[in-house]
Length: 310
Image (cartoon, rainbow, N blue to C red; front, side, top):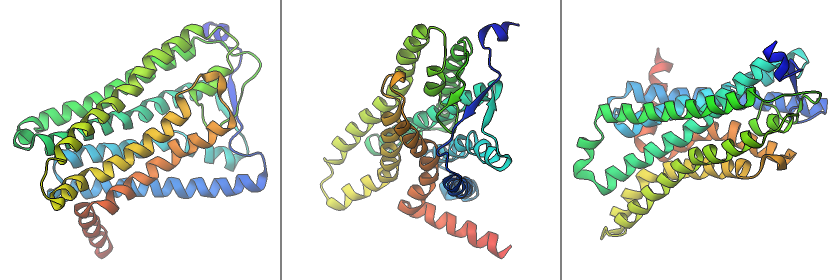
């Protein structure tokens, strides 16, 4: 009875990315291909790091966690969309929507925290090399990863509980292929002022904090690199940061383009930006790290050859 008082609807309708059957078919196969590439690519990264002793370092430990998060993130939304397409329906139950929203927020923010931890690792390696092994010991690395998991989950729990308190009356149509928090909140027929205020303040802190720490880390890194006398030394130092910086720009470029605006301005253009953030970014990450990192190339080559022989 309490749930019925809060919401008179039992499901939402996900409109997806297109209403044209021909376009839906193309989108289905495209998303299936991207999802398989994402899972296989990130899984290969995890296996290569786990099986190659040369990659048993803090940097690759953090990368393995990032790859795992990048497998989970699209797995929350894409399989549901593909199943709905195959069975010819576009609905998602209220409970499924809340669960999808929780994990979407959690894994979406987890990437930011892991990128922050990786930036700190690069700062220690370049600016404090003599203290690196002392500071970045296994216990500290595990603690940093634990924080990167716990904080986003608490953040997601708060947002989901706030959403569960809202009432949804007649309109249950979400102009999206997932239960995006902003799109769902816009459907509420209750007062969302308190919820919006908490989302804007607390959510802003969770979003801005990792980005600020990454920016500060690279200010110190670049100022330290500029002191290196040789051009070759500068290139060597920056080569260890190139992949990470590329992923940071890709992640935050898409994220800020979507969510740094009032929820009332949600439009179809944001759906396209969400595809980049939700679907494309997790797929690009393994390619960025494998193509720009010689050690990763060697490890992946050994892994693929060994599996082919077996």
